Amino acid sequence: MALQVKSQKYHRKWCILLHKTDFAVIINALDNVAVMLRDVASGTEIFGVTAAEDIPRGHKMALCHIVPDENIVKYGYPIGHATRDIQAGRHIHTHNLRTSLRGLLDYEYQPEGAPEMSRKQGTFRGFVRSDGLVGIRNEIWIINTVGCVNKIAEKIARLAQARNNGRVDGIYTFVHPFGCSQLGEDHGFTQGILKNMVRHPNAGGVLVLGLGCENNNIPEFKRVLGSWDDERVKFLNAQDVDDEIEAGLSIVEELMDYAAKFTRQDVCISNLTIGLKCGGSDGFSGITANPLVGRLSDDIIAHGGTSILTEVPEMFGAESILMNRCVDEEIFGKTVDLINDFKEYFMKHDQEIYENPSPGNKEGGISTLEDKSLGCTQKGGTSPIVDVLDYGETVRKRGLNLLQGPGNDIVAVTNLMAAGAHIVLFTTGRGTPLGAPIPTVKISSNSQLAKTKPAWIDFNAGTLLEGDDMDALSQKFFDYIIGVASGEIQTLNEINDYREISIFKDGVIL
Image (cartoon, rainbow, N blue to C red; front, side):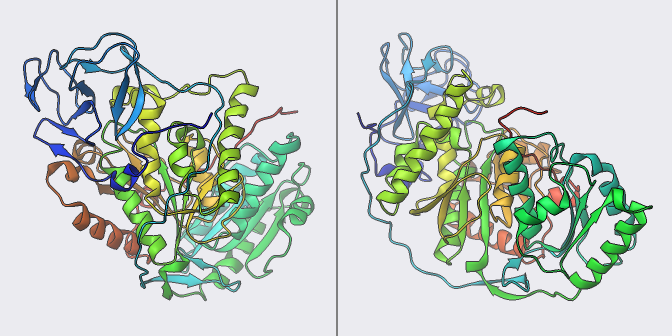
């Protein structure tokens, strides 16, 4: 039976709040809950309903009497069902609300007409590489074929940075524990992610550093890599030289001289690819930060650019909305496979498919996976879905792409970078210092987080709850992202040098 959802047109209005007071907000006319904007004391009147108990900020209050098994509706969609009788004014959360999601589902393609979108023209200042790809940073990356050389790579990067003298934007390496003792798909996952890192245009030059005896040795990795530019990509096996540090430094010197020849120039925004991610979400993420990022995604696509939405488990419960935005039945079929393949991955490991949200999500007011997913998927805006990518694949079509992969923060930002994203837009309601190898813009869902964690948060979407206009804030955010892409603004993960990777694994280690 096809999954049925209410108000299928509503996702185009996700960023519009129906009613708002100083205490709470109602998102959609179909909703039977309000979301608290602050801690509310018992006895407070909200939308004509008296709070029957203290309710924390970000959490939900019943607007009417809800009987057992009746749907709890937020964003205009069911986010689960009541497990007990709930009187108006009562706190609704995990103690009286449960997910309605179960097992595998059948889906029916019900395409929606694409929203009207005016084509736009604009530019940013980027680095045009010899292969025609455009980067937004001009860095040297040391890519390790195996985790055994992590510390060697770190030492080379540190010493080379001392010799940089402003020739490039920086020299970086990204530690990981893989590249040896892996079998089958896991070995392929590692090679695929590292290959895409070598090819990433934010790196003006790349040193591929190996040990010499690993499964993913340099000759083997070269076969995976295919062709490369000998001036831009160079290789070193640590076992093949007497002093691997000096040998590495010598190669990085050559790469810095080569990369220094590239200068920023005006390029069309159509060359820009953004990755969409959320982590540490709260009850406001689907009201402020995620809709703001959705607006930005639509705007970049209107300029001919590309955005990538991943975190497949956090599509569960909202997947039919995405499916109905697929450009044709082929992409719809790929999206169905994307969803069901990940559900079967859970089942293969005897894990509950809908074991979500996290403890931090729940503390922030998110109660079920539907609640989380309906907020999460808003980062993809309203644009049609043009393609579906497997884990480790890179974008082939401009527009909104779905990317196979888990929601884990470090794995997801690595996946987005490897798929071709120049920037990751990372929304959060709880806060995280995490950064990818590429600029990682942290967007807070609430102003309290932006104030308490100024070293983590780049942009505050919480002002939308304080009277800021979405159109005006969207333009401000767009200008900010173009500033990041043009090198005028460094993100906090760059300033703090928080750059991490993690590669998905599903098998045994020898």
